[in-house]
Length: 399
Ligand SMILES: Nc1nc2c(ncn2[C@@H]2O[C@H](COP(=O)(O)OP(=O)(O)OP(=O)(O)O)[C@@H](O)[C@H]2O)c(=O)[nH]1
Ligand SMILES: [Mg+2]
Image (tube, rainbow, N blue to C red; front, side):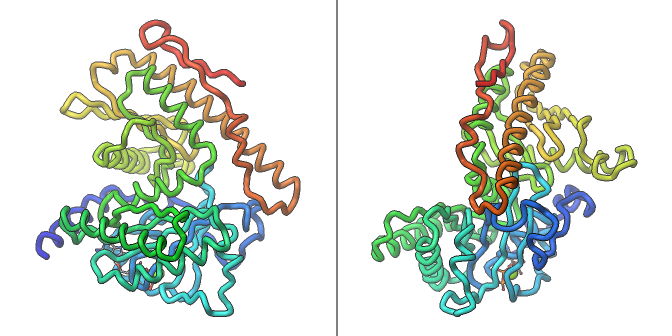
């Protein structure tokens, strides 16, 4: 227990120093006035549902990831007694609603409108408290998943094996294996083999919750293959080791190149965003508070003492590119910067296309279908000419 306390307080100090100012974040959303001013409000935004037993940590996850609450403050959260709808639409790509459910929700209650709730749902995150006995949670998971799948086969099911900060590494693995086997066996016994569950080990006391949420959100971004492709081209032509495209406010990465993600690189990049925002908030021009924290001048370079460089550039109002590269490869910064500009331009084209698609959907008035997932086929394709050192460019061609 001592170890735990030490870990948590250590993390908290760090977290506090890296936390965002309260005025830099998503606008408050009144869940009761859905569909009033915002033309995109309501069913067009994909929904992420947070479900699980009481006290499993649903509200904590939502508050820590999207509202910058410090993990220790979640100790004082009250139990949720009605569905809380939170609109995460300030970010260009990350446009969705999160619905935080009360733990005791009863599907057989006649007031529970499963068609409405599961109908427009993109992902269902089921939170299991790994520090507690999880048999009841597994039963509830099974009931939830089968019910939701009946209504909507497109839902992605994400199981968060949560609060793993209290478990040893061996115990984490064992718990994950056990939950994985039992949950899938239950589904197989019920003849629902076609339902796929993804599992994530999470805790609000480290970056695992941000990483897991990144993966959940990425599955809801139809442009993901285009973004990954752009990142792959960028890194291979600029001798970058790893690049993340971050949603700055939530620190969710909405895309990365296709090399494997290691947790430490992700943490480093998250910390860099905190540093940049904190420094900008303190020393930035104060004319416009938000713009002072992150604007089109935002860029930062951090040299680590192991010959590695972290390089951050603003992509648009909501997104930042954070790269990890070797110091030796940074002597050609001009090429990297040029490639970055090409990359940024391509991202803008993806956005324009997306906005056009959204506008068209709006014009069609009350169309309930979400933005066409085919739009990526019209997105700019990227062709590469030459490697760094030859002409070192990424050429973006509109197909
Ligand atoms: N150790 C640890 N505690 C956590 C974590 N996440 C949440 N908690 C704690 O779990 C308790 C319950 O959290 P809540 O977020 O209120 O749980 P909930 O699922 O929303 O509960 P209901 O609203 O009653 O359904 C709080 O005391 C949190 O501090 C975690 O990752 N690790
Ligand atoms: Mg709650």
